[in-house]
Amino acid sequence: MPQVPQLKRNEPDGEAVALSMELSILDLVPVRIGQSTSDSFAASHELIQSADKLGYTRYWVAEHHNMPSIASTMPGAELMYLGQGTERIRLGSGGVMLPNHAPLAVAELFSLLSAVYGDRIDLGIGRAPGTDPITSAAMRGHLGEGRMVDREGHTVDPVEQFPQHVIDTLSLMRPEGLRIPLHGGREHVLHATPAAVPGTQPLPWLLGSSGYSARLAAQLGMPYVFANHFAAGATTGMKIYRDNFTPGAYGDKPQTFVTVNAVVSPTEEEAQLRSEPFLLQMSRLRTGGRMEPLHLAGDDVRSVRTDQERMVGEEMSENWIIGDAKSARAQLEELASRFEVDEIMIQPVAGAMEGEDLRQDAARIQSLELLAAEFLD
Image (cartoon, rainbow, N blue to C red; front, side):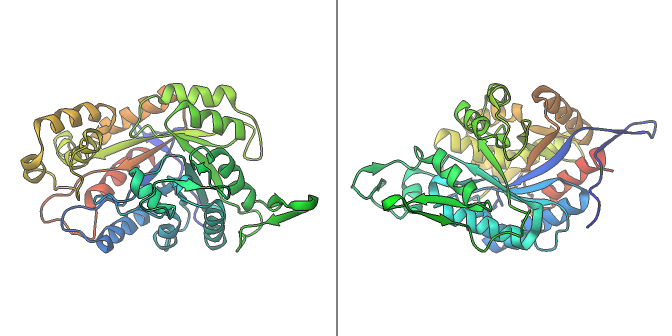
């Protein structure tokens, strides 16, 4: 297996100064106007191949449902395909929305990924539904009801069961398994099968955007990621996590990083232009606007964008990395310093322009290449 390139900053005098920061990728498998789902996954497959060669640390796919601009709905299944041809990059979910799934199904799928890809698997777990309430209910087999009931007929909120379901999922992937008490003092031991190769269980991460998730990750001694790419409050959340961390099976020190949306282009002007399609989508998500496949950068997106959407997008962009390579490097270094992290996960969201190949995301790959030239040896 090739050695992971060391992160460096290339100084003007030719000296390479080592940096204690790694770069990773979050991918929603975006769908733009004119693209099929097949096109989008072909583009993301090319993206991860580039990331693997360039020296990025990990590649995670998200879980979102009923959104025309996002093809990533089942992270575990997608990674079976997207990971093909990679050699060293870690593969993971960012994340599996556990309230939508049975813990055993999640544990089995990610144990299977570990059996295929070895010790390169991350299991990122989230509490949010990743969709609207009706779709979330449909995910759990309760279309039209919007609720779940237990054996006694009592309404069950899967979000309230989240902490226990996290514990159950982790237990199912461990050699000792999950012990289920039965009547008469007996118990049944349940394991995820097919089991991962011994010593290669997925590394779990708890994802969140609030103090709740930060406290839970700390209590369980889990690595933690704050969703800085769409939520405010990372400083508070990470302080709660670090101050309350309990050493455990996954390490004796807090392990964390933050996420951020990024558009890196040869010029500042092009980066601003290519940021507009995803900014429009995010502004519509915030304001309840019409969701549809991503528009193309330039006249296409500007012809449909309202003044309100433009202003909301401009406000949101203040927390993004947008610029040329030198500017992006400075912004990332400031972000790492502010949150005291040695890893940042970027979501490359550069939009496409008219005439660009539907089965490629050339602008997103260019963002990775430009950052690699700044940070990766």
